[in-house]
Image (cartoon, rainbow, N blue to C red; front, side, top):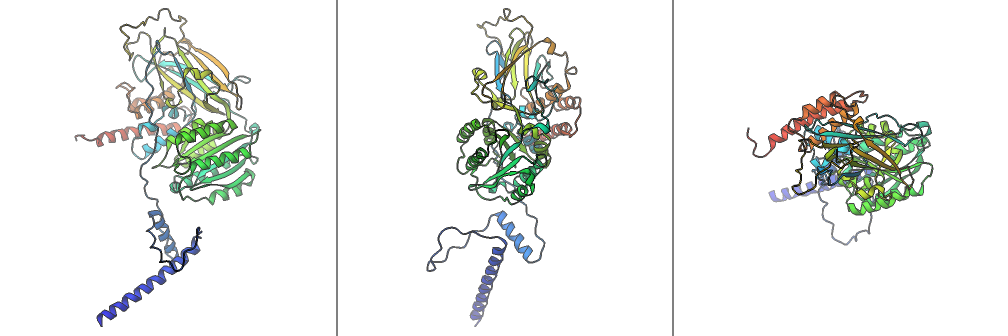
Length: 566
C-alpha cells in the first residue's frame, strides 16, 4: 500500500511539472517570437533529447521573464566577466640608428588615437596595459597642440619644427615635427555620405559595446547636417542592410533603426565589410565625403577573418575613393591588431571608445577631423646631417615605417590628415661629440665626418601629400637649423613640452628602457603640469591623473612579481 501511495504522488508531480513547463513555454513564446527553419519532424519519430541548459546570459534573461510574469521586480542583468582574449600586434620598438650608416628615415603620418583610450581603460582598472597595446604616436596625437593654421592659398597644413635638450637622457636632444591641418568652415563643408557597419554579434552584448556604440551614433547625429545621409549595415552570423541611405533630417527613422539592434550570433565581419562597401559604392556621391564607419570589437570569426585577406580586400576598395573609419569597443576579446590593419590600409582612422565622453570627443567635438580629409597619403622623410647628428631614434610609428624609395612612389599608401587635425612626430637625436652615444664606433670603419655638409643644419625634412582624390603628390621641403633649437626644456614651446611629457609616459608604459634612471613619473607630471595651457575639456588634467594611476599600477605589478620578498 505504501508503494502505491508513493507511486501516485510521483505521477501527480510529473503531471504538474509537465503542465508548468507547457505554461512557461507558451508564455515565453508570447514574450519572444521564435522563427523555426528546416523540415518538420516525423510524428512517429522518437522524442528529441531535452535541450541543453542555457548559457549564463540566456539563463538570466529567462529568470527575468519569469520574475516579471509573477509580478516580482526584474533582477539586474549583468553580463559575465569576459575572458581576456585581447589581440595586439607584436611590434619591436624602433632601434637607435647611426647617421653615418642610415641617414634617411621615412614613415607615414598617423592620426589614430585608439591606443590612448585603450591604455586608459587598463589603468582605470588598476593594471598596466600590455606593452604591445601602447603605440606612443597615438598617445601623442590624442591631443590638439594648436599649431598655427596654414596661410591662405598655401598647403593644407602648416609645419613646425623644434629642437631642444632631451629630458629623457643627458647629452641627447629631441627634434619634434608638428603638422597642423587647415580647419574648414562648417557652413561650406561638403555633405557626408556615411555607411555605418555595426557589429551585432553575441560578443557585442555588454554595455560597453553595442549599447555604447548606439549612444555614440546618436551623439554624432546632433553634429550632422540635415542633408547628410546615413545607411546602416549590420553583421552577426550573416550581414544585412537595416537602413537604406536616409537623410539626417529624418532623424527619428535613423534612431528607430538603431534602437532595434540587438546583439547575438557569430561574427561575419568580412561579409559585413563587403556589403557596406557595396552599399556605399551604390550611393557614391562625387560632391560628398563617402565613408564607411565600422563599429566593432574586432572579433571576426565567420567568413573572411584572416587579417591578410581583409587587408587585401580593404586595400582594393581604397581605389573607390571611399574612406574607412574604425571604432573599437569593449574588452576581453578586443582585436586591436585586426582593426589597425584594416584602418591603415583603407584610407582610414582607428579610435577606441571606452566611455560616452570619449564618444563625444571622437564623433562630436572632433567630428571634422575624423570625417573630412584635407590631405591624403601624407609621408615624411628626414635626412640627418652626419656633421651635426651622430645617432637618431624615431619615437613610435613602428607600424607606419616606409622604405626610402616609397617616399616618391605615389602608389604607396600612407596616412591621411583630417580638417583641423594636428600630427606630431618626435626623434631623439645624439649630437656629434656627445658622450651619450649608444653605438660604439667601428674599429675599422670610416667615421670621419669632417667633409660632411658644414652648413650647420641638423636635418632636412621633406613631406609629400595628395589633395583628396588626386593621383599625384605635392612635395614640401624644410631644413632644420640652429634657429629651430632652444637652449633648455623650459624655453621650448608649450606644445613641445607637453608632447614630450606624453612621449615619456608612453616610454614608461613600455618599460622605460629608452629612458635614463633619473627620469620617472614625477618628471612627466612636472613637465605636463607646466605645459597644460588652456584645457577646456580637461583632457590634459586627465592625462596627469593617468600618470598617477600608471605609477600605482607599476608599483603593484612589482609587488605581484614571483619571487618578490616582503
